[in-house]
Image (tube, rainbow, N blue to C red):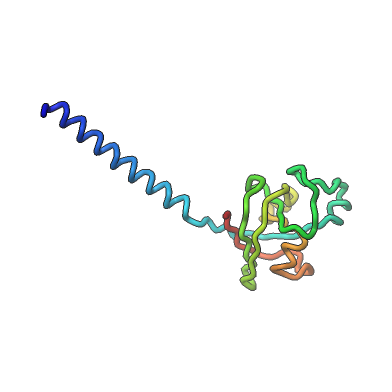
Length: 137
């Protein structure tokens, strides 16, 4: 075998090893859970009407209190989130379907508005605002 053939074989082997390591590293990062600690509040069909919105969410679909949905500026529409109440450990899964909370509240640290049913599953509605952990599914 000539020197050039040996050099090509070694190069191909090194390239395969390099990309295998790169892919394994990318896969492990993709599997890591990113936990975000934040505050969440709730909103309802009634509160939307009071604020003058039509009851249509930012994704173009009708808002319904009984659906486990949420509003967020941080995640694309359709993203599934696991939201855990840090006080009692209760958790729900919800879909990002809307934008919110208001920019003023967002700047103050409240980054999630849960539908009435979703919030009520993990906390009393009377609490209004709770501390949560959020994981993108």
